[in-house]
Amino acid sequence: MAGECGNDNALRRGMGTPSYTLVIGDKTFSSWSLRPWLALKQCGIPFTEICIRLRQPESKAAILRHSPAGKVPVLRADELVVWDSLAILEFLAERHPEHRLWPADAPARAEARAVSAEMHAGFGAVRNEMSMDLSARLPTPPLTEALSAEIARIVAIWRDARARHGEDGPFLFGAFCNADAMFAPVATRFRTYGVDLAGLGDDGSAAAYARTLLAMPAMAEWEAGAAAELKARAAS
Image 1: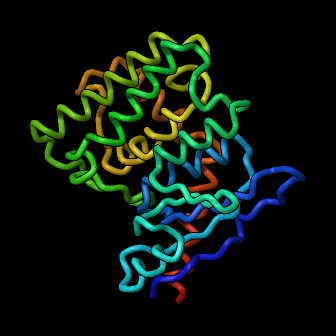
Image 2: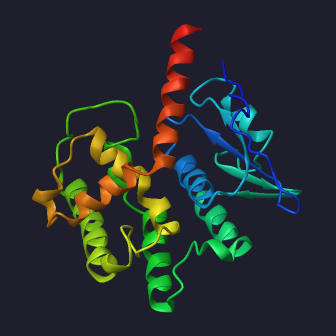
């Protein structure tokens, strides 16, 4: 049965802080939900979380109570509703410039936006052949020409960004930004399917970056939430 997983992750809001509610799907499967959730957590921005179980007969109706698009994630900011992961990340960057969710340097900022948009719009083979399944460890799918080309492109994005910005911090552009939030679910996919990045153009920097994403405390919190969801469903 579809339902709201609750808002037990609600955080106390300070005076004058915007009131945010983030509606997400299952933490095991919803890669799009992870992206803005991770940015909010990493920046320490308070929000209330509502989780809707996906792939159930009632899921669509449950989501439509929150989102006109009928998809998760959706961010409610006071009376404003923002849907789509990248749109939410852009909104947060504008609303909270102090967190520098885009790089301060203009060329780096343009590149970060470009690779984020590329992730948002493309990589259909990765999505279709390596769907997010956070807790699973599955065989590597056949590396078709399309899948190999997309993974190699992701490796190139990560490798090149780290080569230029590695001295400024462990993330793609040094400090954590929206581009890292966009690529975080990809790191989980590579782990789930045991993808050997070395055979697809990695010099070691892309694999190291994937480990950086997976080692984030916020990622550990997301994974703990996914495990708790699976345990609760198994007991029901």
